[in-house]
Amino acid sequence: VQYMIFTRKMKKLLIASAVIASIGIIFLMIGYFTARTTEVSLFDQIQNEDGNYVYTYEFNGADIKKLSVDISYSDVNIIGNADKNMIEIVNFSKNNIHLTASATTVTVKEKSAISSLFNLNFEGLRNYINSSRLLNKTKIVNIYLTADSVMRLIETKLYSGDVNVSGVYLDTDYEINLSYGSVLFDDVKTKGEFNANVSEGNVDIKDSEIYLHKAVLGRGYDNIENSNLTEINADIGKGYYKHKTSRDNMLSSVLRLKTDNGRVRFGGDIYENGSFSQGLEYSGSDVEQVVITVHVKDGNIMITE
Image (cartoon, rainbow, N blue to C red; front, side):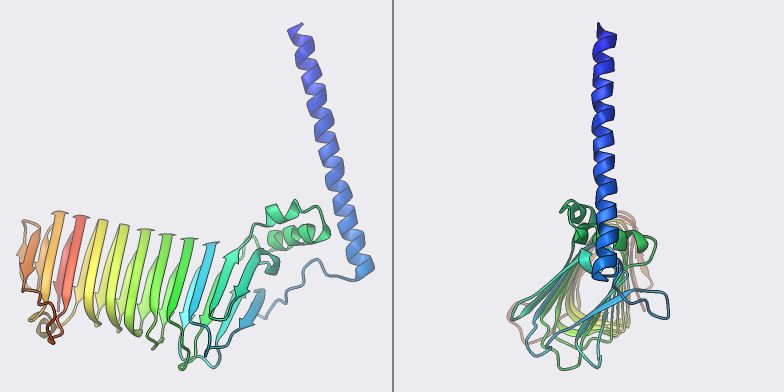
């Protein structure tokens, strides 16, 4: 009896599978003939000389104050002193990107090609084929900003990828959330904030001027070289904090450095007990102090010339 019940279930399963496969073939045929009769290409993005597929969107730099990027896998490059304000989306199917613009905000968000396929129409099929062709290509979002842009906030949310910011001299806040990857700020000037929340990856700041830098790193390092920052607050799980600057810049600074399992180096001095503090923070004073607060659970803290 059990064998007969099992056999009937298997027959039903095979019939259902055959029906689903038949429906899939029908939609493939519909997509093929629709493309031929309407002369619509299954892949409508232009391939450049480097073999990449690029889609661009220009925006008004005098109006847009916020830009938000929310994608799973991609590198993001933010480039200043550009000729025009533009977003360049590289090696994404255009139908996989949901780009919206309001009076002051531009949002770039990734859509699922598989979910679009279940729309049961030709656009869903086209979306799926586009994505399959781009599967092994590196995905990139380039953000170009002019010198007179009024951009006040750029926020990125990535699962995996690198974020590079270079040559931007705008009073912009940066909010970067990243599960796996690295962040580089090179030649950036802002009176705003740079907040980095990285599960596993590194943060590098080089030749930059930033008012406030906050970093929360699960595993990785926070490295600052030849840069002027007014306030730094770093919390690192496993990794290290390294700050290369002149001793003169540190004389009037307020330092609160602590590592649970490691050591602190300040100049030529090494503190094996894992903590070092210096200075008194003045509130409401006209004196501009550098305030550095660092906590590393497992790793070293190094402030050197």
